[in-house]
Image 1 (cartoon, rainbow, N blue to C red):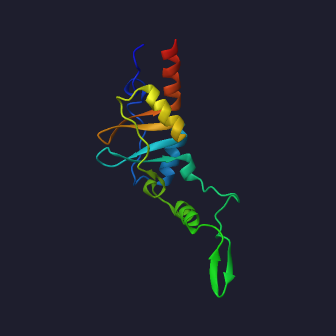
Image 2 (cartoon, rainbow, N blue to C red):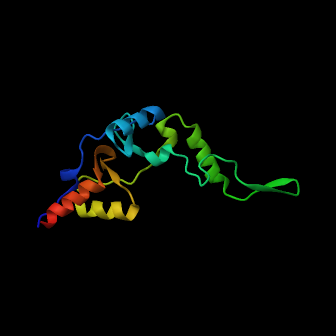
Image 3 (cartoon, rainbow, N blue to C red):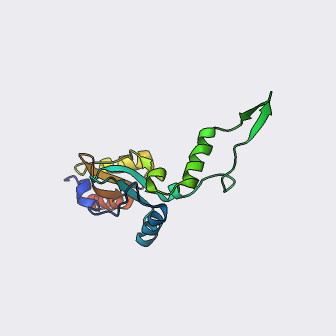
Length: 156
């Protein structure tokens, strides 16, 4: 049976944003297009990141931003949780652009990869969508549903 390639099932014109796009605009694009994530491209069309719904939420067991727990010891502060996590949440809370929120260097796939390879990457990395790049430039987007549909069609 002939292989199906990513280029055959990808969306060749995905909705994208730039690092300079405002957070409110990202939210509007996601909502209006019913998308959980968007590729981030620079002015040259290179895929430089991805921004998802999860990036727009400050994840915390208490539901809000809080100062890390600490104890005072010998006149100094000893933090009981990593400050790096607090700093990351604080940056997200203050973010005004995609560049401040996005995940840089996202997992990508090439258009000539097989759908089976895309399925492995999606499953191994626990992603729902992969930017499709050729020589670093975004040429499409493939989703878990695209891959599942192609694999089901391949099996018929």
